[in-house]
Image (cartoon, rainbow, N blue to C red; front, side, top):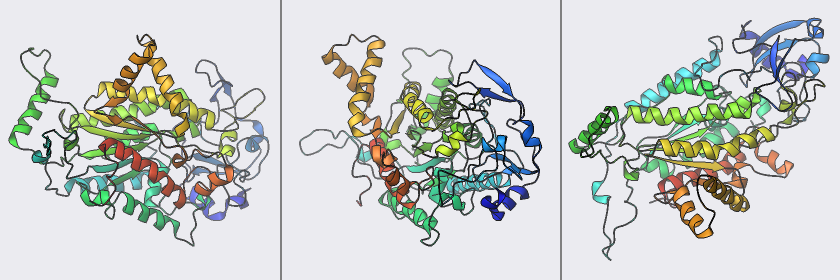
Amino acid sequence: MLVAVGPILLMRWLSRGQQQQQRGTLTNTVVRDSNWSNNQQQQIATPSSAAEEEDIGEGYDDDGILRHIYRNDNSFIKSNSNNLTTDNDVSSPPIGRPFMYIGDLDPTVPQPWPKEEVDWWTLHHKLVEDVRNSDAMPTSLSVDKEAVGVVNDTGTDHNQPTQQHLPQLIFYGDSITEGWAGTSFGNPPPKHRLWNENNHEDEQIRQLFQSTFGSESPWGKRALKQPLVLGISGSRTYDLLWRLENGEFPTSQLLVKDNDEAENDNDATTVQQEVAVSPKDAAPDTSFQLEKLERIYIVLIGTNNLGGGMLPTRTIEGIDAVGRTLLRLHTETFSLTTPAAIVFSELLPRRDDHRARNMCPPRCKNITTLEPYESFMPAIDAVNRELERVVDGWRKDFPNSRIVLLSSSNEEEEEDWVERLKDRMVGNGGDGKEGEHDNVLAASISNNQYQHRINCGRTMFAIDNGDEFDRYMPDRLHPNYEGYKLWSRCLRKGLEAVMMDSTIHSEK
C-alpha cells in the first residue's frame, strides 16, 4: 500500500521524525456510540493484528493528521484507510494509515500544533510577520465627516454616508482559506488536491484573489490597507484561537481620529470599566457607524474539527469561541466606538465520503459492528443549522458589530428559514399573529437595514450533481480555480451586505 502512497509523500512523513502523539492516541481511544452521544463512551484497544505488521514510522500528513504507517494492510488498517485522494478514483483511495481522533479535546481552549510540526510553525511565523508588516504600513485616510449626513436636493438626509474608503479585509481559516495563496502549509499544494499543474492553477487562484479582493480589484484600490490571508491547512477551532492570541490579529488603527473622537474613545473605555455610572452621564455613541469601519473579518473554520471525529455540538462550541474571541479582541484592541464586522461562512459541503468511512474506529455509526458513517454531510448540516443561533448571540452581545452569515442554502429555502426564525420568535414571547410577525421579523433580521444572512446556494457548492460538484472540488473537499471563482461570488455578496452597497465591487 505504500507504493500507492508514493515515495515523495512517504519521505515527507518520515522526515518529520518519530513524534509523540500529543492530542490523543489510537490505543485505548475513547469512541462514540452510533448517536455521537456525549454520555455513552467505551474504550477500544488497537487490535493485535496491527502489532503483527511492521510499523515503519509516524508523522503528520498534508492535512495535518498524525499517521502511523504500516507495511501491510489487514483488519485494523482496512477499517482505517488513508485520507489520500488520488486522481484515478477519489472514492477508492489507497490504504495504509489510520486517522487521528480529536473528539475529546476542548475546541474552545487555545492550543497550537506540536513543536515538531515544522511546516505549521513556519507558516504561523510567516503570518505573524505579515500582520506586523501590514500594521506598520502607514495610512493617511481618515473619516470623511463631510460625507456623513449629506443633504440632497430635496432636503432629505441620505440613509447612508458616502463611503470614500473601504475596510481592510482579513481572511481567517484552514486549507480552503490558505488556498487563496495557492499553497498548503506555505508550500505547493499536495498532488491529491488535483489542481492542474500544467495550467499553473495555484497562480491562477492567486491572481483571482488579487483581481477580486486585492490590489488589482475595485475594492483593493479603495481599501485602507491590502488584505491579509491568514489561513493554515488543517486548522481547527482551537489552534485558530491560539493564533488569534499569538500574533495573527492586526492591531493598528487605520483611521486618523481628531481630539474629540479620541476623547470619546477614552470616555467609552472609562464607562466600560466603571462599576456604576450615573444616569446623567451620557455614554459615547457606540452604535454601528459604517463610515468608521476599518476592517472586515472573513472566517471559515470547523470542517477539520469534524474531520478529526469531533461531535457537531462540540464543533459549534469551538466556532462560537472563535467568533467571540475575534469580537473581544477587536473591542479590547481598539475601542467601543470602533465598529467590527464579520462575514462568517457556514461549513462548505464536502463529498470526501471515504474520509468519513475511514474514521471508524473510533468514530463509528455502530461501534459493535464497526459500521462507519457514510458521509460528513449530516454532521455539517447539524453544525450549519446551529450557526444562526450562534451568530445571533454575537450580535446581541456585541451591538457595535455587523455580522453577515453566508449560507449554502438555496434561494428557494429562504421561506423555510424565515418560518423557522418566526417560530423562534413565537417561542420567545410572540403571539404568532402574522402582522406582528412581520414587524418583529423585520426588527430581528435587520440592523440599520443590513441583510443578516446571504443564501449563496450554488455559489457555495450546494450542487446535487456529483459530476458538476467535482468540477469545482476535484478532491471533493478543496476548491480548484473554478471553485474559487464560484465561491468568490458568495463572498462578494457578503461584503456587499456589510457595506449595504451592491455596487461596491464596481469601479468608481
